[in-house]
Image 1: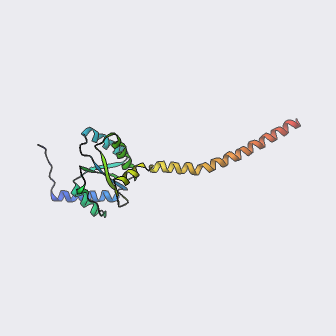
Image 2: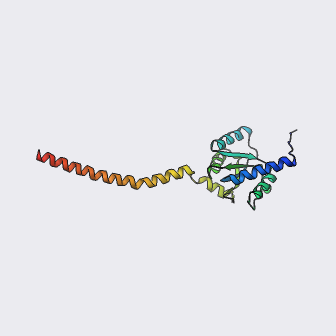
Image 3: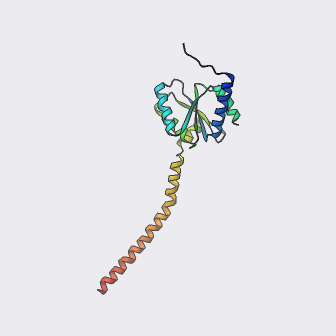
Length: 178
């Protein structure tokens, strides 16, 4: 027989309060169904999320609903979702949680993204999958730097080509006079 830990009303209140603050602070929240996930696979997922600075929280569905409502996110009905629900909260990068879970779900069919929250707006599963396809903030910044650097690099190449030509002409003149 399983041991079920029963929380007191005060403990539930504190848990909801803490979860509400985490949801408010998070840049994105992903709802994950992990029903049937083996413990060793869950450990791998948690390590991946931790490496990406994403918090993984398992709480009763009704408490998640209350925390989402307290955080000002209307319309979420986690209690009606099938499976066992966990939250992945990302405070650093909006796409990190979605990317990590999407990558993990490709190798483990027990994990499914059910929806999420981005900037206090609810997203369905298809929107979360689309979010996972977006490059990370670091990748986007790298692309921006490369794009900004390209015209400057071309300009430098043109100027150096003109200088090389001038040096060759001066060299040819000095050889003729010598």
